[in-house]
Image (cartoon, rainbow, N blue to C red; front, top):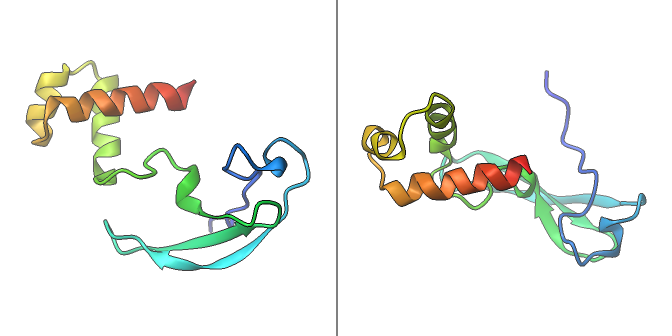
Length: 108
């Protein structure tokens, strides 16, 4: 069984609790994700009173097609060219290029 999500810090950089060790939050309901219909829990930061969800901390945050995350990553790791990968997944090459940049930022 998976452990419940427990954020370690506020995702907003301008929040004072983002840099301190004292981070308090509470549950703020949930919403249904458009791309796959899953229920995603929401939280609110007690310091800045802004809301965020478990999705905020994921690599595929704000992506329209999160189902492509794994196939693109696997293709890039397997040394498939960007053009062939785009052709195989039926997307445009700039889509693959943006994901490559996203993965690089995430790894940093």
